[in-house]
Structure formats: structure tokens, C-alpha cells
Length: 296
Image 1 (cartoon, one colour):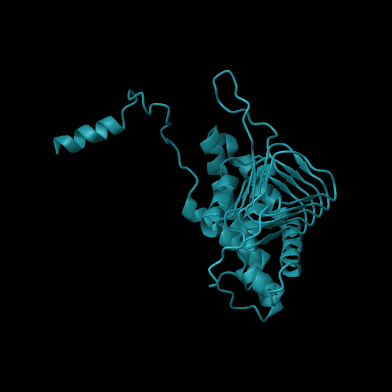
Image 2 (spheres, one colour; image 1 turned 90 degrees about the vertical axis):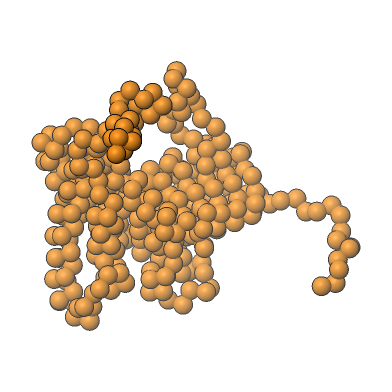
């Protein structure tokens, strides 16, 4: 038992230089299980019947009452998590309670806007995938829509200067779908993701309207500017994709470059330079013919 006490004492010590920079949690932090419940509530509010257990889906009046109750519950849960997020970042509950309440109300007021944007994403995915049989199937089954619900919600919270919480929400989608979208990215309407696994969209990306990405696409940073302490500076370091751009699978687009509107970037491309509108960026064809096949 002396070993247990000794180990516990070492782990709680402030004098171990290898990890003395890690802060101790002294207040209630955001609760991930509660945030998962909040996201499920939001999905049930934005797309009634597709998420959760909706018993009154065939009665519009009762369904509206249910949505009203869901929003009231959302207010209580979200307000607490926003408050905890502010406390995690800086400050005390006493300082932040009023700000948290105003922020929660302001976010709830944004829900119709979020639903309208998500509706454009649903239409874009459906219109770009001949395998999709209905809008309902896209909402219910497609990982792209799951990721975009998380992103659109998280982005609005980030615009309201809520710390930590937006990142938790998008990382939940990342874990579930393999689609990694930073909440700080700016994504326009009618955004379409096909398949989606392995997509990475960085914090300072700007994506226009009617843009389509295939699986494995990286919209990342090429290099970092470092400050006097050798730490990376948070600057505009990710690509800009203008309207009507298509990026095919496993393309890597790096740095603060612009892919001009109505351009196509082919699969497996490594792109670090801007291209003008209506560009076609593809790999060079093989210079030798294939002659030694085994006839399989």
C-alpha cells in the first residue's frame, strides 16, 4: 500500500518537470456524455423522426409540442455546458452565468438558419449521388450529413466565442464518421461529401457554395510560422475553394492557396499552388504502355 500512496503522491505533485505544465482541473469541466445528449436533441429538433424515439411523428400538432419540449430541455442542458466551457477557458461561474444564458438563447434563435443550411447540404448530397434513393435516406444514413450537423452547430457556437465546446462537438463526428472538420472552417451552402472517410478540413479553410469533396481529401496547412517561443502562430494557413469546385479522392491541397471557381482537382494530386477558375488539375499519363499482363 505504500507503493500506491507514493504513486498517487507523485502523480499529483506539482514538481515533476516533465508534466508540470498540465493544469489541474479545479472546477466542473464540460461533460462529454451530456454533450452527446445535446447533439442528439439537436438532431431530433432539426430533423424530427430521423433521430431519437419520436412517438408523435404522425401528428403535427403533438410533434410541435414535442419540439417545444425538446428546445426547453436543450436550453437547460446547453446553458450548463456553455457555462462549463467558459469556466474551463477562464473565469468563474459567477462571472459567466449571465453570458452563458444569453449565448444559449442566441444559439437557439439560430436553429432555423442551421436547418436551412443543412437542407442545402442534404440536397447537394442527394443530387450528387445516383445511389441515393431519397432525401430521407441521405438524412438517416449518410455520414456526410452526420458530420455536417455537428459542424454547422459547432461553427455557430464558435462564432459566439464559446470555447472548447465546438471542438468537442466536431470531434464526436470525427470519431463516428472519419470526417474531420474544424469548427472554425467557413463552408458555404450546398456542400457535398461523397463517402467521406479520411477527409480533413482545417481551421482557416474557406469553402464556397456547391463544392464537392470525395473521400481522403486533405485541406491542410503546408507550414507554420513560429513565434518567439517556437510555437505555431494561428494564421490563415489553409486553402480557399471557390464556388462549384470538385476535389476527387485522396487529393492533398496545402497552404493558403486558392482553387478558382468551377475547377476540378483530380485524385491523388498534391497541390500547393493556386489555380485560376475553370482549371483541370490531373496527374500526368503514363509514358509507357502496359504489355506484360498475366491475362488474369
